[in-house]
Image 1 (cartoon, rainbow, N blue to C red):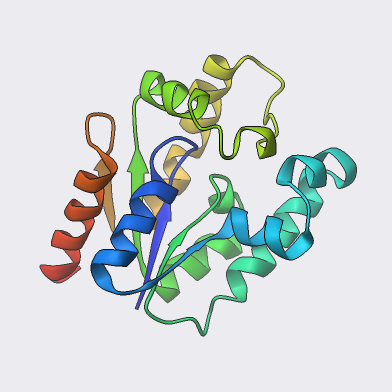
Image 2 (cartoon, one colour):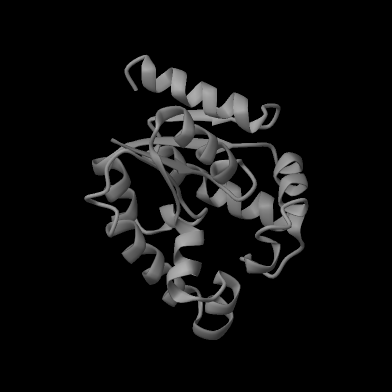
Length: 173
C-alpha cells in the first residue's frame, strides 16, 4: 500500500508523513528530499539553473519510479499535481490524502522551516503571503481531484494529523 500526501508547502506533509510512517511500520519517502539527494543539489539550484520545466520532469520521473514501492508513506512536492499524468498516477497507485491549511498557518510554518528554507525557490516572484494565496488557490482543484481524503491541518499538531490519517486508513481507507 502507498499513502500519498499532497498539498501546498507548509501543510505538514513531511512532518506528519514521517510520524505516520512510524505508526504504520512503513518506509517514508519525501520526493523533494529524494530528488535533492539523488541529484546532489537543491531544488532551488535546479530551478535557478535549468528551470521549472526541467524540475517538473525530474519530479515526474521520481514519482513514476515509486510504482513498485510498497508499504510507504510518500510526501510529494506541492506542485506534483500540476501534471495530469502525475494526477493519474496518484489516483491509480495508492490512497491520497490532501493536507491543507489556512494561508496564515502555511506562512508561519514555511517561515519557521529552517531545514528546507534555502531549497525552496519562489513560484511567482511575489511576496510569500501573496504567493501562498495565489498558488494554493490555483492548485486547490487539482489537489481535490486526487484526494481520497482531505484534512485541514491548520489547528492540528503533526501527531494529530498522523493519527487522523491512520484512523481513516484503519477504517477502510
